[in-house]
Image 1: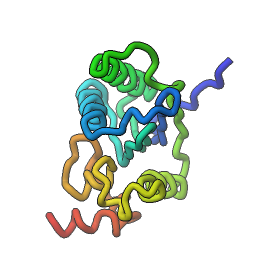
Image 2 (image 1 turned 120 degrees about the horizontal axis):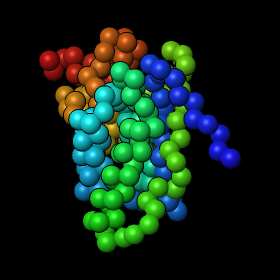
Image 3 (image 1 turned 120 degrees about the vertical axis):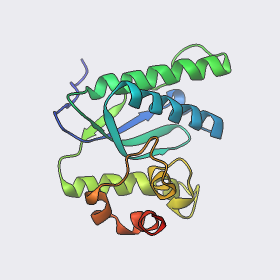
Length: 174
């Protein structure tokens, strides 16, 4: 029997979903863009914000906050199933795209929020994809810097205070 998911009203979550068989499903720009378009559609259907995200080759991370009583499970189920259907249709595949159900951890403290935000941000740097996180196009931080708030929410006061080095380019370009 699966352990029940820890869901809380007004919580923020670190969500991770991995591709089946550790396949590099997000290898191309086209597929990463397809995933982001599904997330944007989900934002029209459900009420939630994403503070940071990162799409890697075979998984993604999100720092997500369901709003107004929305269910994290329903949001993620919709995103993962719609993307899987589009991915399979694009390649003419059938079967599972995702390894397992998504993983989620409730962000319980300011310290944990900082750690998760930074972890997501440095993911492509640690994987040696880029030297500077700002150089990675599929990262919430890059979207913030570029003023693209279609996926990630504009940084609020908390994010600006905690991560001045990350939000400084946004502040100076305004």
